[in-house]
Image (tube, one colour):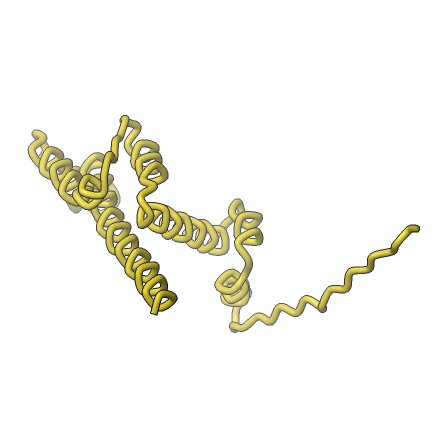
Length: 165
């Protein structure tokens, strides 16, 4: 008894919009599947940059979603990988204080002999040193992660109360 299983697929139609090639490429990236974005991650130029930014933003949203349910390991891994230092998040309170921790890093960078700034060789203007810039970036990311985790948590509580009602 051999059964033949057939699978039919709908045609794949991908429409592009834009005047230039780059605009048309970016219009596809804005609506494509996660697997497609991963496959395009090593593309060069504006396309590759847009894909990598999209994948990174999706990853940060995933980290926030995990944190909203009490899994802080992805967040700690992200911070440890970015800083190259061990990192511990032991509770929701320590997760919610991440911005303060990075504010301390910013203050420490500013207390260096150069005030946390270096001279940009191209423009001649002062810009944050590498340590200072990383602390600023991580503080901004921490604020975003905390807000997104709170939003995911509120959404989950709302859905749960709607089911119970």
